[in-house]
Length: 246
Length: 254
Image (cartoon, rainbow over all chains, first blue to last red; front, side, top):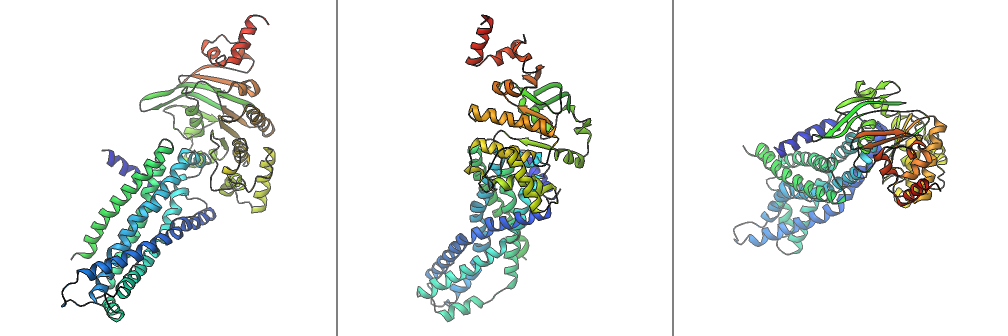
């Protein structure tokens, strides 16, 4: 019953987010600020993680190819598939649930504790629209982060595979192009858009409806990370089942 | 003028406000006093429209808030200014941006005009050379002034203050009290202040409402409060050592 109550409140929150819009000129400024905080601010960690994940995937694949009958270009093929299908969209989104999610929850939660949200409401401003809507719009640019993660992951695989002496550059590049299905990219970006929405709204929900003081802000951040991760993992399964299984 | 009729508010079945009826006049500093947990903040938040009362109504110059549609309620809220206990300034904005915020949201003024209004409001609260500072870079007293400037920049008809001098030293607290009183008179607005500071009561208590356990126990002004026989009020007023000694001296005829 408790979870049903929370789901109901989450849906009502979404209704509140898209009603009584804030003045357009103010929203524009807020959206650019959120893009800077949530997207640009996440590029460094994303590039770092994706590069090394790609590198590790390439090394793990190479070390497990013990049969001489299996062509070496499979290293590139396996790295590409792993990075595009799962590591970039899902793994990076789980990391972002920690980085972006806790930032959103703690910033909105602190505004709740220090009565800044009450101040907005007293002024007659729809605080949900003012605080959450710009985050949702900013997160629409999140697929660009994932595209960069995909590129960096494959680059990491190339560097580890080729410079680690596991595969030649020619073999890697041929494996990279082998049996490429463009729909896999479409699938990856569809789920990225969905995860972006979850990354913006679930932490906002936990921050907006939190009660208490500084300690509860910390607790809300933790529970926002846990729930965002859980929902991302479950929806990843459902989207994969719907889009990839015949 | 704000009129409150038979106001009831409960949380989880526990009644916090138990039928309050009173009036707050325009051009006067109206104080709500009482011990912690007496329902002062809930009462104030009901008047601000942040809490919806279970029963009763609040009229703003004859307009009952609960009888207005959502759009009119929002329009009425734009006529209200609020100074929160912790100032509630937006951390990421400078002093100037904080005060300009309501103007940006609700007017179509050019930046120059808005800046003029902001400087006017900051001058009114005697705050100089702080425009570009962040709230974290100024003192608690200065934060309160900025909060007052933000509340009055739109020229509200109703000003609400929740413990405006809590956490301030007595001298700064007096300055803030006097500032609120001056603004009330100059702008001819209805001001309601939530406090448990007896110095404020003595300084600016033109109308005082005393709450106890969610009931309106007593109302009067700053001269009457020291003469009343109401036990709950005298307990509250003479709870500090200083006032106790004054009381003892009075009783001894000194």
